[in-house]
Amino acid sequence: MYFTDRGLEELAERRGAESVSLAWLAERMREFVDLNPEFEVHVERLATLRALLDDEED
Image 1 (cartoon, rainbow, N blue to C red):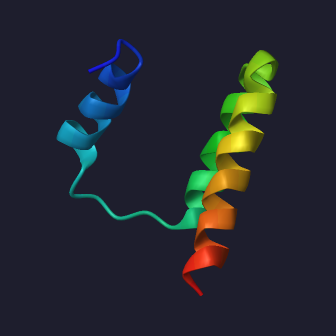
Image 2: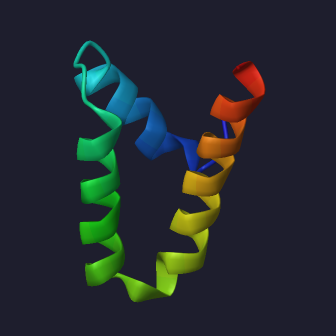
């Protein structure tokens, strides 16, 4: 496991059974970027990747 995976692992362990909407997640990501603008490019890339993967499944 990479060092950067620790947060993802903790999220899955603590909240893996929860369900959220993509609209809720998008809003949380916007809030994060507002507080941490240096991560805007990375968050946008993640959101774009997720959106494109959804298109490939159709």
